[in-house]
Each structure stands twice: as structure tokens, then as C-alpha cells.
Length: 265
Image (cartoon, rainbow, N blue to C red):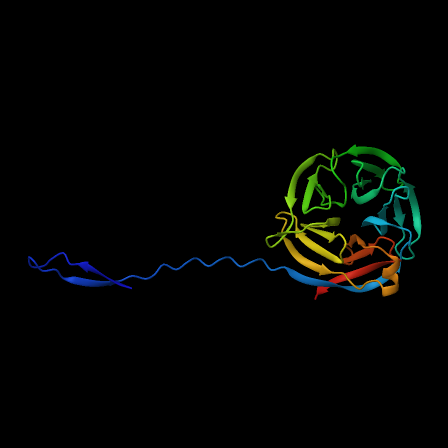
């Protein structure tokens, strides 16, 4: 682009024009959208799972599987041997409670209830009840990141809570790009990431625990045969095995627990 400027020295009545070239301003490049990995599961092994367990929460600790089951009149917390699915110990909830998400804090298990606003605290070894804590709203998924509890309520919001008092500390909306991810259900905390299954789907999302950004979408479909799927309900159990860097997946009324690796799609 050329424009003309008048020179400072010239004869009276005359004007000398000097061309000056201007470079157009360059717009700053827009930041690239964060990459969301597309993953699937590779089955390492499958083991038996109680077909009557309406699984709502799952965790792995020192070689034992802990499970929360739901439904009014049939809710419980269990210690389960993974190899054969044998229930080693079980403690039933009162009929008025619908068991939901489960997390471990030291030697305590914290079990949510769906619409009762009650978190049941049990001894890790005996499953005997120690205490109850109150909260507002619905309880769905629960995990412990080492410092705080993370809780879902079926929306796109995760709530961080004090692991002792259960006091609400802050909230975070989970987004995949600009889209809020709704129906967050069962949770598993792994380092600085949170894994959440999306209710009524075979999809698990991996979430950055600081920003709420989805960093991976995991397709966990096809684990059950067509006949098994007809008798079962949805995927709803995620437990991380740090010693093998694998995940244990199961669901409501599923006949198996699947140990899986996460691999690119």
C-alpha cells in the first residue's frame, strides 16, 4: 500500500510528493483448539460378576474390589474377590436408601445415596457403619483425588467436597470444546484426571481436573454379547488398577467385570 507525504523542503508553490509503503497489520493467529483423544478399550481379561448387582460405584484397593449397588430395598456396599466374583463381605442399606457412588478416604468408605441427601460412612475392612453426612441435591458418582472428593449429580457439573466434613468447596463445569457434557455419572479419580461414564451410553470421558476440559473420549461399547446386553442395564462401574495401569469396567446387572487397557481408536 502506497501513500504520499509532502517533503519538508521545496520551492514556494511547489510540493514534492514522496511515496511511503505501509505494511498491512497482520491479525494474531487464533489459538488451536485442544486435541481430544479418541480412545477405545482392549480387553485384558474378564471375570465373573454378580448378575444381581445393580452397580453404582466401583473402586479397587489392595487387591480387593469394593462395590456400591443400588435400587430401593436392594442397595448395599460389598467387598468382592475379582478372580471369581465372590462377595467376601456385604452390608445392606436401609430400604429407604438407593445406593450410588463410592469412594475411599483412608480407612473409610463413603457411599452416596440418590435422592436422600445422605452419605453413608463405613469401615473399609468390616463395612460397619461409622457415621452419616448430609448434602443437598442428588448423589450420582463419587471419587477421591487424594485431597478432595469429587461428586457428580447427573448434570455437567462436578462438585468438589471436603473429605472429612463433606462441605462443598467449589464446582466445575465439564466441557468438550464449547459443549457442556451432561449426564456425568460414575467417577474415577486418577492423578490429575477424572474419568466419568456418561449415563445411558457406552462412553467414558477423561477430564482435566483443574480446567474441566475433556481430554479424551473413550468408546467402551461391545463388551457384552448381544444376548448378555438384553438382560443387562447400562455401563456404570469404573475402577483403576495402578499396579497394571488398567481399568476395571462393569455395569448394572452385568455378568462380567472387564479388565481393559485404553488404546487409540
